[in-house]
Image: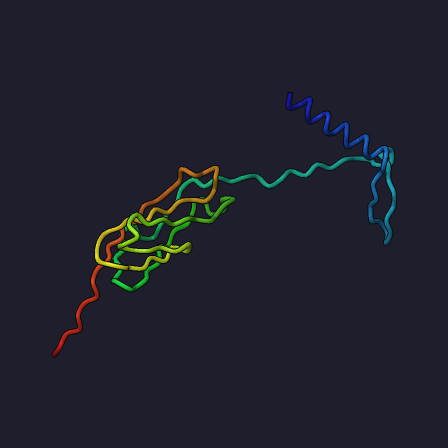
Length: 143
């Protein structure tokens, strides 16, 4: 069925060329060509899709102080995957918040998990978990 459909598309395109022709810029002006004037047809292959195989991070256990921010440094593998974007989701928004760039801000002492996922629909099962420990700011020492 797929081959028949492809042939029909080709046949329709050939009919349009015969009926209308094409204009090609050549020697500083447009020239009209019909199907009989074309020596060959060149088909271009679209760039191949490269799926995300995994997500890696430089650190899986991060400690952040209340009201401070640290970055989750994550990336996809392979480096030439078609979709490079990541999404960050925090398990406990009362303990920590995370923005779309992986910046985690400590809100109150406790533990949370930030899940890093690929936004590639074809590789949606790829994810990574980072453990976040939010700690109190140390009190200044009086000496």
